[in-house]
Length: 114
Image 1 (tube, rainbow, N blue to C red):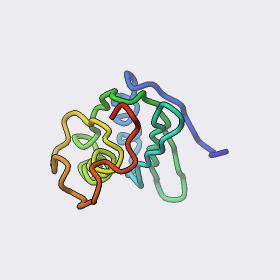
Image 2 (image 1 turned 180 degrees about the horizontal axis):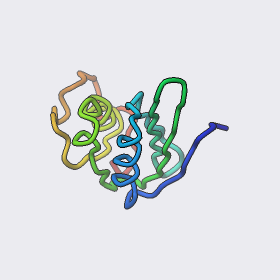
Image 3 (image 1 turned 180 degrees about the vertical axis):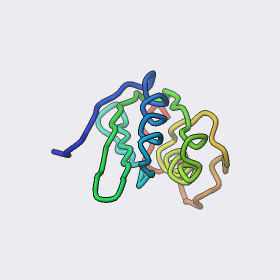
Image 4 (image 1 turned 90 degrees about the vertical axis):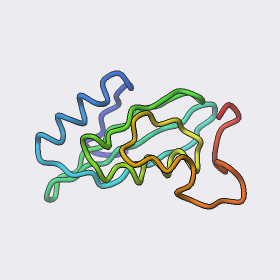
């Protein structure tokens, strides 16, 4: 079990990320995992030796708002989630439109609805 883990819905995601940014945290990673008929997204932020995690779960085909306006480097993680899992990310600052990774199969880890 992760310490400092907050489960959040998509509706509150951007406001929570802004709050974390205002507390001087930096983005460490965004991870996507396919679980049954959903994706679990884990956002990790760090400040010195403190780490916070936000977790949200989405259904196949559901759109996720980009946090790249808040944390510009998040565009890399978001493009990765799109390219490898087929997750639709709305408003990415630098959207590679499925061309960040070259894969033999489009969205190789995507769910059946992606």
